[in-house]
Image 1: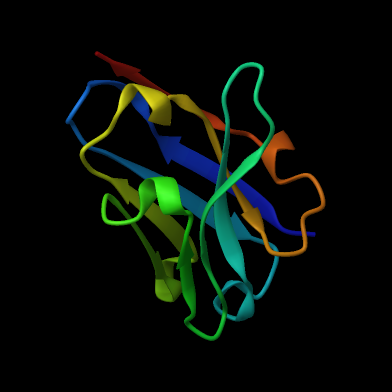
Image 2: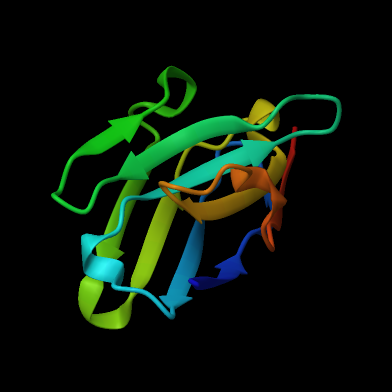
Length: 115
């Protein structure tokens, strides 16, 4: 079973930047499909970005050009660099493996964007 520990997040003004980190243990990280998800109050869980084990990257349209996903397999860590943040980006962000049926139910980290 994989364990994921997140860090980063917090409060930032609109236009600012934050970086999220997600460190995995208990699994073969470098072969794992990984992703970032978010859920705002009253909204459904939303896919933000994915980084597959074979190097394919996907971004949801709302974050294209502003967010960058990366991974350091030597550190078993997934990152999400978030630039030009908007108030509508505010949510609880969670990292998850590609096989997680409930990706927004993990540890999560709050991202708050003030206007």
